[in-house]
Image (cartoon, rainbow, N blue to C red):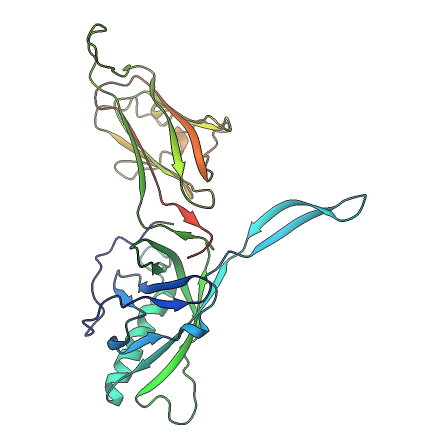
Length: 326
């Protein structure tokens, strides 16, 4: 799932900041922020804004829940065959207040709109999630894509709904894992050819562009995005640890070799192949042998091999580490 790219601005009429770290169940001291589908930032732990988190009621920030598939063992017990991570539900209580009824109502309505707009379909017929982001005192952050489920009904008791009320929001997460918003990138580029006798290493313009170790610092597998820049006639991506590989052949879609500067983007989750003009190039992969592989936690030996490469040929690998907890 792509990250939010809209400009990040302050919530309407607040002027507040992200707040100071507060103790949150399951994760310790942190500040929390919600980024709605428009890119507007809503600090959740900054009381002067007119709302703040009731930390005692927060839940769902710990490890993901798994559904286990097992096989009975003839000597008793069972053997684990598969573990399927389940969607996550996060409960987030908010207290909203104002000096006057209309100030309170305005803030309440703004928050309702910010969360429920995750359920509205865009022009492409798709719904865009918001992002719940947890920041630590050392500046590191983790975020998770969320959809509003329920909770903005208020308490409905005498005295509430006049200048204050609380909402116990449930946020539904189709991907249960948290991700680092800071992207990890690996770049390999072919240099200009030079004499064998020049005492500086150069990369051949015909075959292996790079064999390297890619470190995935997260807790779970990630599915990277690849960007190929020509010239090239055939590009092969291999996970040397597993033997999984896929190849991109531009001639398979009638384009011919990639020329200098032409770019193709390959996404592994969801699978897609797009030429620089947006056209669908999924037929350029070597189906059915192609495996759009992911990167396991830790060290991953990978290799990028290009045929017909030259100065300017490049492969870029991008991913955001994923984690079990906030």
